[in-house]
Image (cartoon, rainbow, N blue to C red; front, top):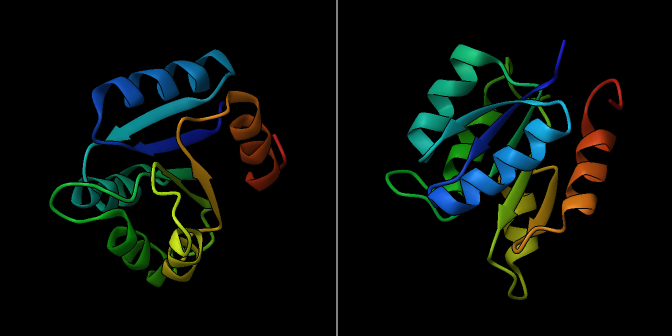
Length: 124
């Protein structure tokens, strides 16, 4: 059974490209377009891993991450910040919010896939 990845991304082009990459590599992808949808999707779908943009409408990725990680049911789900924010301090802010890793856009496909494999519970 394919690992389920929740992709939280409000930009349709980015969502399409990352979804294509993940599905091509055998992952099941669930999408959310804002932080509120992300929290709902985590509760309903229980993904194996979350890719979280930080600049989102309604509820930003930092706050969505804090809420997901504060819930003991979901705290162990690996969560990677996937963001265009690459200024000094942005990585620390993402990690402080509860992200397990931080990857900047544009995405290096092989680097992203390698990190996903490392973070998934069975190393798949």
